Length: 420
Image (cartoon, rainbow, N blue to C red; front, side, top):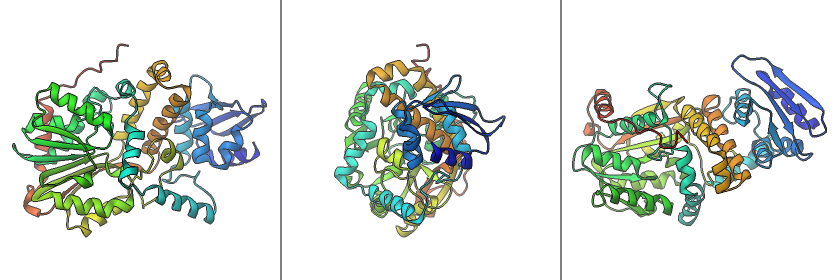
């Protein structure tokens, strides 16, 4: 416990944390803070303290997954993670590997993990997105938007915020009826179907998770638009032809930096000369870094959250003009908070679908992600690219006008599980 005690005494400045070791000894850290909870945690295993201290960025999550950390009510693991992260706000965090050799090894391993050739990309996508359909129904909105919602008002429902997110994206595409749209990393088809419904465009969605493609095609068939909105199990590198618009939402994070040059080169080839490309992704506020080991191991293998500089540099090299950039700062924190709330609401069913360890892993993932967007160095980037400067209007007024028009046309569905 001495090493963990030393680390926590150095770390905790805001908020209070009381830790009861497995032997009953009590340790207190920090000072009262009205914005942070006083969290009381018990280490239930003699293995816990050392497992956390030797590599906090992966050990803390594993200790919680293993049931070696218990949080005393009325608080829970989200309160613990938010308190810790508020004391380690830097992007890499004050729990990053110490010493030049450990830092070098961590960086090198993180880079190697980003090498996503076709077979590995497919395997990683299945790991993340081919989980039981029911799991996603339990915590996402009805349209299964598994990316940041757009909270025009923090009190809005998740359903409203996700509908507003699709309107916000569509407003930046400057779409016209009859256009051909490519949606790379199409998820469960919600954005593609939205664009077709509002603009009468033809959409091809591609992704690498079989269940996502199967589900998306089922949706298109049920709506009677399967001839206009098609979904294919395909690597974006295998897409051919040309498109008026290209969208990717939550896709860049899965590429890995070694593949950025190929991505921008290929999308440049796919985009018509007067076309518009749009990308929405998680991003770093600061310089390039490394995705933490726990997330790479358990949630997004092969994933990397880019710095804005990495995205802009590759666009420049491939003769794509960065025509619009928006930093979305708090929206994902609010989204993740709601996903966490719905996950906790359905703890018994999720545990029955998988097991207690999986449920605790999912809790820790959502809480950690929220903390990174609320207190850490993560944001969401929305970038618009064009080949020609006359492909879009001269000012951004068209975005605001179109967003208002779209929002006036739709009412969000009620969450179909809210009463359960």
